[in-house]
View 1 (cartoon, rainbow, N blue to C red):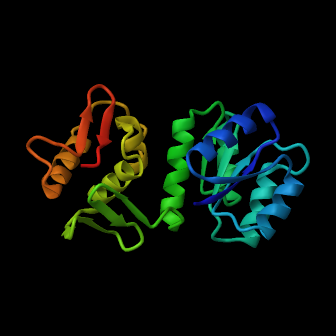
View 2 (spheres, one colour):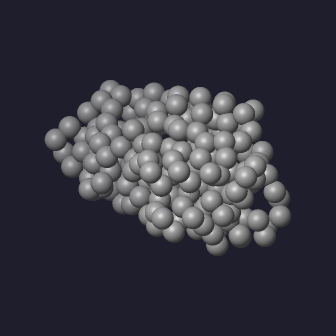
View 3 (cartoon, rainbow, N blue to C red):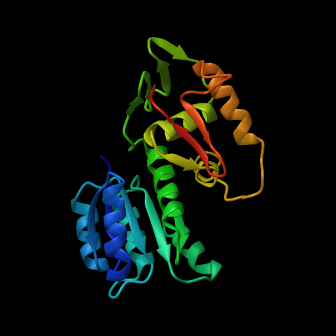
Length: 223
């Protein structure tokens, strides 16, 4: 279970966000100012920091800079209420790995958070549902005892759907997490990869595992 540090002074934002992150399966610590964030960030062991840019004591950019100097490999996702591009650039220059502008959609923040954890290997290594399982660290997948020969995108797509087994995953979220794009127009890319993944799983022509949820996206159903 990845451990997160949320640095946010606004209770109206922090409290529902902490609750949402806990529901998603994360362990969450919260700091309301930069001084406490630096102490917790350096002394505790977190897999990722969600850092607000506007803090009441030490500026978020300075907190980011100090955390990055102390912990070079720590992923930092910055939150900013400022719309100016220069603020995002300053945050990235200070060492942030990515940023989300307020007001943000929870789905987008979660997608960017997962993408950062995936890059650092902090997500759960073993994922499975039904007779399908995968080893995220070794990037190997099986159905029963048969190992699957998957491309990079097919593996990432299967991993996402397995982690959300039983729940509908939107096309928007899949495109954001797997292809790292917020483009919302129609694209055959996802459908082509889904068709290939179904063939390799032996889940066609009448899918029983990788179900299409019309108007929304896809759902993995354990058989």
